[in-house]
Image (cartoon, rainbow, N blue to C red; front, side, top):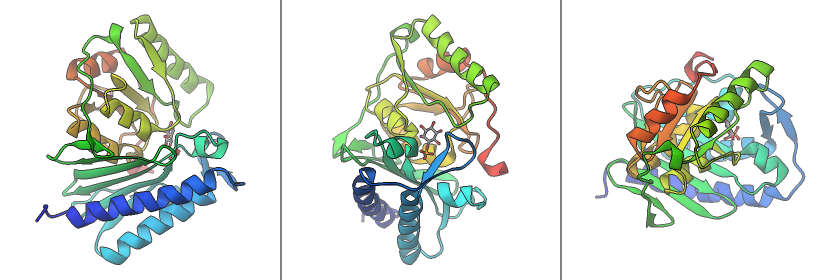
Length: 277
Ligand code: IPD
């Protein structure tokens, strides 16, 4: 009665809450930490455990659905978004925070059909905040409707970003000079909280005016994109063109004017594409 993907949405919420419980408990325990693409790109046994739990439960209920997930991709699975119903999962977003017990850690579950994002569920595990967005039906946090900021002036903006995993001198120079450009344009501040998905949820809540990043992945973006759009915001490519989920880069803002100002200020940092790895 509630639309075709209602059962999927309910399962996503259930599994995000269950995963959150596991992550909350594991946060204070000893962890097995390994590195992936760089010394700052971390994974723990909990990332694997949670991803396996989420996918196996979904597969039981929806055996024909497809999956794109962070740790499966790290293990070599291809990231391709076909027209089939596809779950796009980050079991722990903010793994570095998780490792350090910095309490800003989320589970992110997005769902796309016909290559269009239908809903997103992001659970802030320690603050127990459940963010949801469904196409055409609004965005909510623990039942409260979300609305983005209406700010259009960069000199009155609070901007969020994330560092990204590459730490070679050339990348760091570009990263810092992008931040410098925004500060020169007199942005009120730039914040880095260690979780792309939760930063994007803060944007959706109107607690910040813009977000940009190079080096994030489709599983950091999928769920958050629905939540931001349903909160009235804009999600676009750093070139100012339409969002490309696989392009490893994004600008998001409460208004198109703000998103364009950020996009114009940025120099590109090349991270390749998720679907070419
Ligand atoms: C990462 C975090 C980090 C951001 C990276 C993401 P993970 O996700 O959100 O803050 O800079 O781009 O990939 O690896 O913790 O799931």
